[in-house]
Image (cartoon, rainbow, N blue to C red; front, side, top):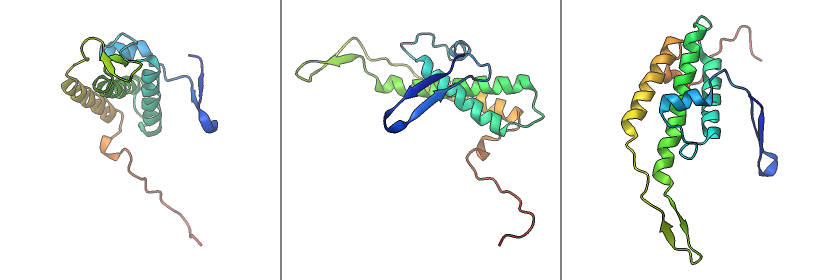
Length: 151
């Protein structure tokens, strides 16, 4: 995958590079959302990179590569679905007129996402536990042993 660079104001750049082998199409298959109009590829790519970063930094060194790949796929899908779940309730189809009136186009998207989101979270948590990552420990500071004296 090619590197994508997005430039923002004040010198902020977001560089999206290669991932661990999880493809956007695989994440789309897991969450069963194939239209880019419903969920953009860039959103899925960021979800993949978040999962890669978390798992690469915390996975057990003895975890089999196949289980690491599975955990990355499930966590990527969960993160992408979180974005999707938030978007469908906040993105109403329509446009504003010249006078500022809102003109709806068709009906608002309405899907029940809570149950599927909970199922995906359980699947991701189970896969993470298989590779030695406990969800409860994520975000907690590490204690580093110090040998010698501190002056």
